[in-house]
Amino acid sequence: MAFINTAPYPQGANTKQVEVLAANANTPVDVFVAPAGNFSVCTDILVSTDDTAAQTIQLIIHDGTIGYVFGTVTLPATSGTGAGVPPVNMMSVFNPANSLSNSLIYTDENGNRQLMLKASEKIQFNILAMTAAKKCHIRSFGRDF
Picture 1: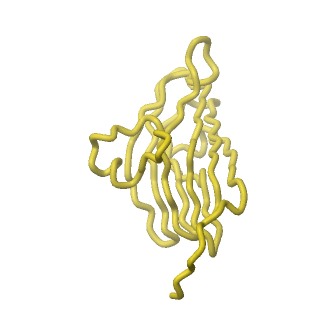
Picture 2: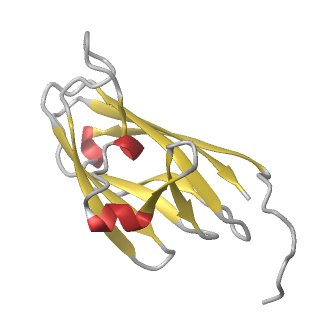
């Protein structure tokens, strides 16, 4: 591989919106995808739900062949849809003391947590269970380089 002696400048924004229905619970869904040929940085993943029960979400990095679970987060009931319950930014819920989370998510010079993905890798969420007729909304933000 040839050495490129230039700074990696962002080529554009990378955003994705996903709605997960109760019928799709326990099936990984893509929430952020790095395009082929580029690496990407995911900066925020906002999650809301109208479920009246808390949800357990697995965070997965998929390399194109295998999905690796690298964290599990509990999403509070009615996050982002209930009075006084804000949506959850999944990038901020990782415990930096957790060695696995700390090795995957880095903090930039401004204190923002970010996750780098190589070309064609993706972040997936697997919601382990959801109340019937409820849904979860996911919106991711990042940059492609």
